[in-house]
Amino acid sequence: MSDLALTVRQLSFENRSFWRNPAAAFFTFVFPLMFLFIFTSAFGNDTIDIDGRDVKSSTYYVGTIAAFSLITACYTNIAMGVSFARDQGVLKRVKGSPLPSGSYLTGRIGHAILIGILLVIIVTIFGAVFYGVEVPTNTLPGLLVTLVVGSASFAALGLAITSVVPNAEAAPAIVNFSILPLLFLSGVFFPVKSWMETFSSFFPVKPLLDLVANAFNPETTGAGFLWGDLGAVALWGVAGLLLAVRYFSWEPRR
Amino acid sequence: MSAIVVKDLRKSYGKVHAVGGIDLTVSEGEVFALLGPNGAGKTTTVEILEGYRHRDGGEVSVLGFDPAKNDRSYRERIGIVLQETGVEPFLTVAEVIDLFRGYYPHPRPVDEVIEIVGLQEKRDTRVKKLSGGQQRRLDVAVGLAGDPDLLFLDEPTTGFDPTARRQAWSMIKNLTELGKTVFLTTHYMDEAQYLAKRAAIIVGGKIVVEGPPSELVQADASTTLIRFIVPPTAPPLPSELDQDGVVTAGVFEIHSAEPARALNLLTNWALENGVDLDGLTVTRPTLEDVYLDITAKAAAEGVTSE
Image (cartoon, rainbow over all chains, first blue to last red; front, side):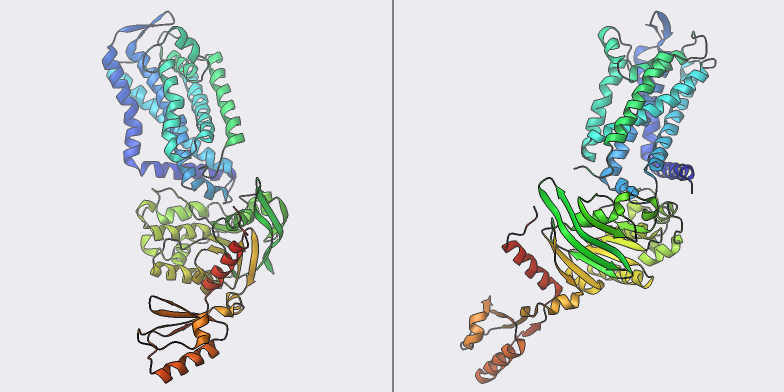
């Protein structure tokens, strides 16, 4: 089999495995919807001012929660899943087989990206049906590119963070510590101003949020490409990939 | 033909010499057992052969490959069963084997692999639901999926109940009938004695003895053990036996290099004094005795690795 065929095959087994654990799959999908429900209920359907534009709060939250879903599916799930697989010796076993390392990881990441994009679609439909949020049309090209670049970048960062995770028990704490503050400071759960905005703009969550929010904003004209933000997300992704290539471990660290 | 040739293999971790210059030769189609206490360099040696670690010095050739080069074609011809391995818990036995088969150019059919390890009844059971012993057999099955010429088995029966161990042993014997070479590491000396055509004991990063288990045992005849239960009323033993033997909790034990002579003295004494030699046993040394003897000597000489 070619490396590509092996990657696709790996992805399909990954997928089969994923759906065999219905409890985990259920919460993966319900979690973002729950957040969407809580935040839109809490902050009502008022308008909020984002960069001088009035945006309905439900529109704001559909965008941020869509981005949040993508980050959870790619960054958090890859980081945790890979840390666990490493501790259980799954990675070491793969390394001793003829399967190219790249095919294994790409299969795994590919699956995470598909789940991430599926989550964004579900959040969008949920938002459209229950909160009347407009589904992006003219900005769809920009949104799709954002989702692909964003998911790939966060998956690469997820791989990179596993190199500082010593064991599976420590994975949830370290992974959450690395991402939760950024989610808050970047405005996933409430709009941010002043130093928080400045601070978070140096990290990859904020540019991703801006990209998705821009695509969901009905006022946006054009195809929805914000090259600066897209570049920032991609740059973080490349940095993550380089760190992962350099420091990734296939054996339990302990 | 030799499947594995190792010459003067060396590996250090910092200042610790894990492997201090060992030579090994394993012929094609034989079961070779590498024995040794924890920290003796066993795992380091195996992992160098498997390609997980790089050596500091020496020559290694496995099936004509240098494992350090990380050749895909090398990994296509070996099977590795590590001490601790995991597989995706939500896949079934057959699916896991099939997944791994896909990595190899000439895999063995799924059901043949399942039959070799005796998991027919669990074919469509999810990995999560298997018992510890069954998961270990699945580990071996995954190692066999690619129909390798050489199989590395790292402590394959640790944690097995006696029945499961016997089953695993006959499975490993079956493998050699298929012409496979098996490189085995184990803590169980009976396992090595039963399975291995040749065995080597590694202590402190060096091979201390090597050869067929039966020869290793014969070379160490001094450990023939004679024991019996001494009645409280028994008269004193002949002085020669009394000097070399020990009585613990009413049981007399003597290690003798001349078992015929010792037994003669003992039975004459018993007949003369009308003593029944209750619980009399004469035990040939096992590989375990040889092993304990060698590792104890090594420890006394200060040959420790860590």
